[in-house]
Image 1 (cartoon, rainbow, N blue to C red):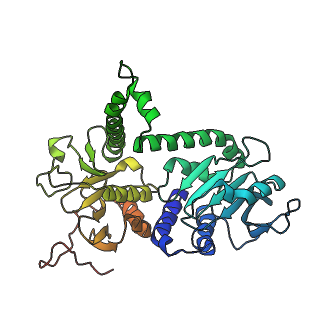
Image 2: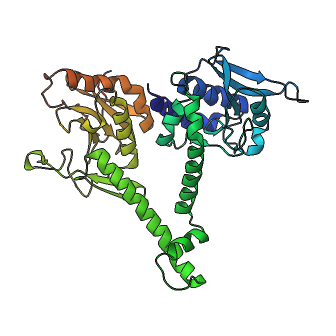
Length: 397
């Protein structure tokens, strides 16, 4: 698995079990150690790679311990201090990291509650840990742009110099993005004034402030939706696709480029219909399937088609090359996967992230289409008990 997939798998685990974790020790066992081992790739049971309860006496402070020290090339490179999940991370929690940072070779310090990871270095003063992190990774909402930087700290791709060189830019970009996110969500008065004064020529009075506050909020939301639309168009069919985003869910319809490819029935994939609503969960599932099979084919060849009954994922926009079907428009969700005879098996899911458990089957399906031209028949449908068409019967696995 690539580091992005490993990170998503840990995010799923955190989401499932966070409510069950009540102590700091449980947080370390359930989330922090898997982050070090599964995501970063270090052997947590090898003291040459990971030292738990790392001790380095500092002045009059004797016997203080850092939760973990990560070793690379025989040197302590990363210090990790963990707190209980759900506890807010404050700079006061990092006092031991501050002290240890100055007396070890480590250039990276991590403060975490198992879900949010704050990465620190010494940009402001040599050998003194900064008061603000240069990178914040939140497993409840992973920022994909940070994954390449995280990879530089992994055992397989460790590149400390590259991390340090990029740290200052990451620090300020991260802070600016968090400020923008706050302003888009709850615009402050200064933000409203900043924008209003660029479109309104009169004096910025209290009346004008009250007039523009909801306008700034509305414009911000529309702008974000338009940005999402543009990204979805690129991901789901290029500039000729039509996508609209509203109230947290998306409606998608791919416009056929020719009469030959236009659907002949309103129940076939690719049809635009008032009853066809593509949800964010379906799009999440599509992105997961695409990320998995990108090890076999370029992402551009993995195409989505939504219908009233299921969300289809195809190779080369070809009905004869189904990769998966997402049966999410029901109380019980299913993932449809296909065998060598194109017989669909529907597997119960609790969340879209469960798709990662079937990565091997999905990759095998795509590899099969790539390596053989003999699969030309349309996919066979599973028989569903006519007494309840909403809940499919699963074929034997």
